[in-house]
Image (cartoon, rainbow, N blue to C red; front, side):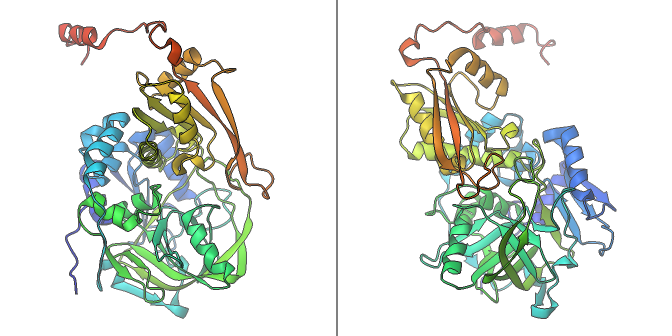
Length: 485
């Protein structure tokens, strides 16, 4: 039997909370009600403080025992995301530097590491079986005022296994409580968990599933990171940490889940029973997609730690408290994809918060040949991290900071001719969550690639930028140090 290793902030939520509290990044909130108040507190505070909002730990929730807690805004600040990624937290002051450091100094230096399977772990402190299962033994919130019910799965990881290949996938998909032992999940078409689920259901078989609803930081990051099928999420997480993820296996399905998780549900997605799911306030800031029938998930086991913590993510109109990490991870994944496609000299990318981390994407490039910027834009528009419900893909030169919306709009207004340097694409990947999809029989949309680079044929003769040079700016700062403190 392999023994449980030492906990650190990346893979134990309680250690992460303690590290955040010591850095002044945590606020304790007592007596907020599970019915709409938790999500509202998180949203109102984040809108006031944006990326400086603390992580919120709710306790003394009415109708529930003390110690049954809910956590919002796990990565609501760049500091907390840096901490979870094992980066120097000083880098959190500049998102481009933070992204570059992540890709150059952390991600490129690790190899995938297979997880270790254990027979013990804190998540097994309490095992609830069969008829004793009660999903609302936890303070499951109604996150938004118009949600169709209580959502236990938001900042979560849904674990499935491909029946053909055996690959285990961990993805973040919303999960609504329907009864004491049933729930339902909406998974968009094309997502890996949906593909796995549909293979079972089309064969008339139940789909085994595990839902991690009290998620440790590293598993939550892995579940939200867009990666190819060749890279299982648990192996990616192990590689990021530099040591194996420690997992245990469910009694019913044999599916693995983190030994240090807070709360885990295990059961089956049924092939012959559906229930109404939704609506839910989604990532783009709308109640989109309506309430629709989804397969019933019957829960047969609950595993949880003493005094468990339910991890939560209430999506709202951007910006909201779990958006920064999505923008960061999808931008990193986009850069991976462009690099993997063999496109040279891509220098940066950012999926902007105002576009909810999906609908407004910017890529910067050091142009090397005619058509280079067009190539970047077209490829970026279709890779997995951008291809789902995207709208606007903007390509800029390498002197433009893709994370700075002022820089980007300036480039669009001075380097792009709308008639000749934009490309409209149709029949692209979308879903019923798309606010502009009105016919659910055709889940596609259109998008535009905007080339806001200097025309390559005029690159060397394009008007010079009126800006103090970096060298002269350094001299000025040195001459007047008190002024530039």
